Length: 251
Length: 354
Image (cartoon, rainbow over all chains, first blue to last red; front, side, top):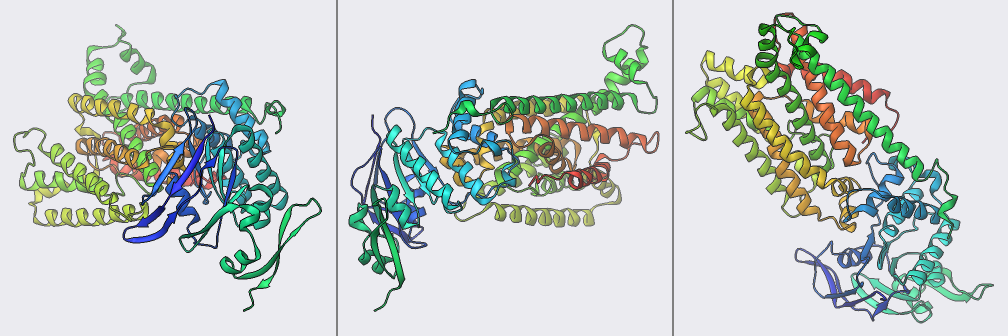
């Protein structure tokens, strides 16, 4: 069964203050990657936390994940101060909601995730000893090991070098296709968005600007309106559209 | 994607199994230290017995005199076991407080639970006020227990308010310490000379108050509480990765915190009610366990329990050995022994443990 997610007039409130309102999307299906973009403090993380059930607010979130798996959320903050190794922390994520005994199958799954993200070399390092980028990869591993059907990734590559960004985002896209995972990805790099996403949801100041296919949404007009910059969309040598920034918007 | 078969024994499941075996060995070493300490504790007193004599008495050898058997089993055993159980309970309580509040300073002592217990006990010792008037025999312990539970529940319900962070809870606990210490000072100021001496002695903490019924009650509380924590081992470990991360793993963070705090309250309050204020175990036990074994609760909790039990048992040995024939209050010795030990462990440990 293919997982799906649909938001209808979803919002977030802290007490009486509304920080996000009226987010509505079409049916987001398994196998698709939806990028959530917008300026800092636009409400992207709040939207993810709302979908993950960590925040309350108005609106309807229709989640269909079938019999196995579920909604898995990777928070933006990956800082930790616990005395656990990388391997233990990934196993820990795997074992939540399952029996206490650690079986060969559990360890096999952890080994596989470590290989997929090429972090076997840090498997027995302490979490506190990792760099920001390594912590991000481990956090992603903890999320992927739970066999998600709907995957909410809040800036999963913000601390990674360019090579690792391309590699990780490609892996996410491949996993989405292979396992019919419905991926929502908050990310600032619009070129990466154009490379991996099928759809873009734009949020600014807590409200939805638009939601649609990448090439329809990311336009010079959007750059000027949301990011206050002048820019163009051009194609690279592999014919993939790229954003070329000219500078701050002129009036 | 890369194949998992490329993982070598050093990085994959083989290395994990080796890590687990190392942790089990550490637990075994702690058990041995504890057993040796208990035997030593049973041997030391006005009449000194060797390790082998104590072991013979424990296994009921016919070579052991009736007098020695009475001394070991009826006089020294309740005190020695009380040291083990109280150390285990306070250390487990401290470990879980540090886990749910995500703070290395959290313990029954620093959050005001011990101070509340002291105040409750002082009411009985000075004014004869019993919070449960029908239980005269245990009036001091019951007063201490009720006040300790009240303090723990107060902290818990305050922590449920919107916008209250773990740092706020620790600050709240510190205000409780100051409040109850001030109230205790007031009671001491109003007390007669004899009652004042009793209060001061109670607040120092002493295992000489141990009796078999108290040992049994504290053991039962410990045996009820520990399996509750062990069943939630994965969830409690996940809490240390952060609230959002734990929640994203499907842990009901709010409920787990409530449940753990209630169990911790009981676990912290009962020993304090019976033996008085023993401050240092709740902090030092979990920290030693964390440095030795990490924070996977499946091993961290048993290691905390064993560390706390071993430290208090060793402290009991020391408290009887400093001046032969004199037993110093254990609360004083705990800090004097525990602080340098923890300090040396922190300074020699190159890995970050908090």
